Length: 319
Length: 266
Figure 1 (cartoon, chains in turn green, cyan):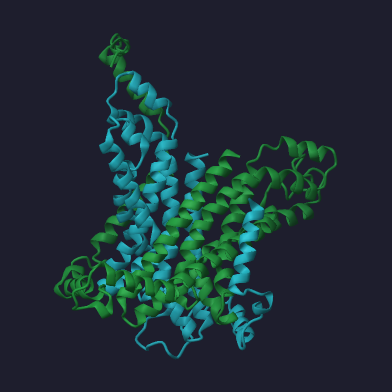
Figure 2 (cartoon, one colour):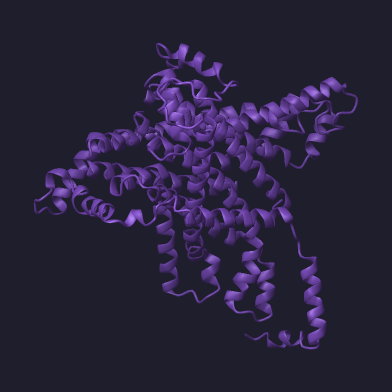
């Protein structure tokens, strides 16, 4: 390093003066009782969780479990009709190809289609719901003078509207997709809709809320200009909020698409035709070789979606 | 972009045979929906089903215990995930390696760390759980590890991105003063990313709570277990008690993390 002289500049500061500066800086550092107590709480709770023996760590390593694991790894993962035979990559390949053409390929496509339909529906839902959850838009004079001149009842109604919209968005996202799909399946009967609707509802909740925050964080100047020219709330939405927020919201949409593919795979466990269906099917027949094959296929699909989503997001950021 | 998405969605909706007509509830679906919705704001406060074993304690105690177990699984999973994510995130961040000499070894290690992260993330936590159930059987540790693997991968990926995108000013100043590479990283760069990393960890904890609840569908006794049981017993009041407990838990954590985030990020 050639910048040794720079280091010497600190030399004139005596030990005492230095200690003073350090203690002064230390005194000024940001402190928060909330952060401190939260950290302590989580550290203690985690320590208690592990110490309580609830996870039965030692029981997981007793003889029976180890036997289970050994049987699983040495026998059950080996393709069924190849067990006990001396097979090579050729036989293994034939087995995989047969499974892929029989079940895997169709389920792979179905999973992808579920995710695509769901994310499009979720985006649409978010576009409709988000404006109601934007605090700056749901006032009498959007972006201008706030609530000047509005009656108390009107103000109350609009604050209430935003609160209700936000509450619905939070509720939609607080219930896991899997639970939503479980209920919808019972109500709508078998088919693709329960999965699509469950994914769409949950993600509309997330995207709607994120979208509302994006609009709230926009530079309000142009919106003020439009409002002063007499633009209505709808016009401001159409000409300011949507176009300005679109880029960021698209980033979120493609990030959620990746999640949708992951979740669509899993929803099959409930009996909806995606990769999860064959995973559950193989599991219930104790065909663990087949089960692992479909899990691996799902992993490949997610890796692909991950890649596509990353590429698209990079393109959106550049544009 | 939006048009392309819409077109792809239209093609897939067609391929799935989705039609609005199928949105009409199945036979019995309407009655089910009505019975279900009727109890939304009157959740059960005591057991309603005859199928509950007589030695089960009061409903509210059982729901509270299930909520506690949901939190415990989430805590166990997240703590393991963090232990996994910190070293993996460091190894897969460009700023960790750029502080050192960038030889072929660094490139290999970086690539390997990223591959491990992608592999962990690509399998959903419920699928990890299914695999572990097959390999180990129903032990609480299976659920914890199933949560920890994909969450660890995701945390590591985001940590690495946050480290690489953190402002460089403090790190550069330290380097100019002659700080060692490890000091630049630990004292210059990492502190600038710490608030974001903390906020993200909190958000993932919220997700872990939801996942932990869903693990109940696979036999682990979290909120999802009672929820499914109540559904099969046609005890919709009990079902809503479990559902409200889950929603309250998630919203409380969200509020908490929101309060912290407003103070430190932004």
